Image (cartoon, rainbow, N blue to C red; front, side, top):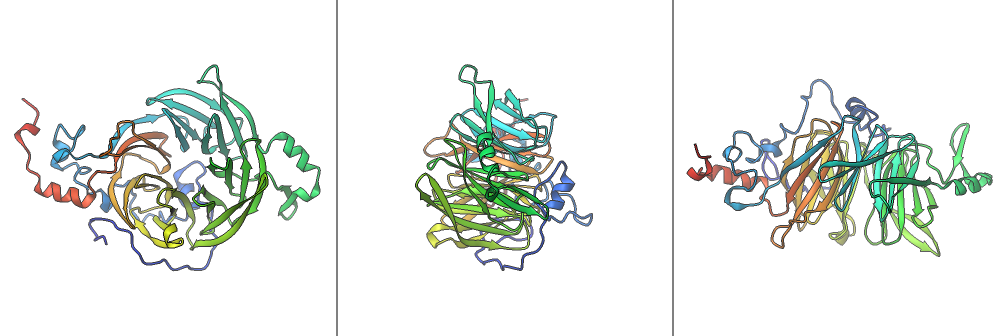
Length: 445
């Protein structure tokens, strides 16, 4: 439990009620914060003070508080009191060309997408290269081997490849569906579906924004979710569309390939659905299994911990729900750490990261079925729109560390180092109460 002023934030085990569906606007922003809050159904009226994370009870951590003796110590940037690991900012990258909507990390490279239509490539906290699409805000990026897939506002999925001669050069090698498949399908009237009163579109092509992408590397599949309410399944080897599923009653905001052949989708209609993949020769068939959540507020993000077989769901009410496979996908609890919409989620090891429209990132540690908030990463001046996590090369057996990348509508990407061994907020508060500054902790005069 958590009192009004803070404390350890634990998963509540009561199952949420399932109210009736209502008409929910798309949860994704166009170009500014106001539009984002409207679409995600987040209350942001003038009676509510603006939040940047500083008012969150989670930020009562003595390491985040400016009046803490830890903050005054000249040693806190490199080590914490009592030699414990800590979580903190490594660097920040800013490019005044648009809000950052998507990112993906691979090795020592980071790819970022924005509403400027550019995909930027960063290396060692510096601009490395970049490439530009013809049109369409870059809403999603995933990387499969030497191929880079980008999902766009204009409904297209573009495919890129790194030049074997010059790693800084990226060449567009096609789009999904391929031009050949598009022409072949367009001949047969049965390949069209009616989407509006007087409009029909090809079943294999998205006709609205591609909001999310997810890879199943083992099966060589790419999943795409769209504001056109469909989930599409693509075979990576030949870019062929294997399936098109009318999955939801409103825009799909999140899709993730999970464990045991399961795929999860989250929508602005307030539902999280589970699909089971079956292989049929060279094709696939995804069958609807169940609805995990049915609520009034929009689903805005999904993430899966494949090792622990747990699915996490963020929504526009600021909550993170989760379900556990070992309990037959029974609702496991709720993580309460944000004031506004949870726009992105990521998992790594025993940690879960949630980025929010309140401009903060909560770091949660899972121990059994209990989730504890380790820290709140603050520094962004706009909503945190996307997250990616890579293992820190400096990790040791006793101290597992992760590098976290966060993209924001403040046009910046921040890089954080996070340790699984860092003490949680309650531990840090007790440490602060018992902390006695040493003469050695003051710089020599």
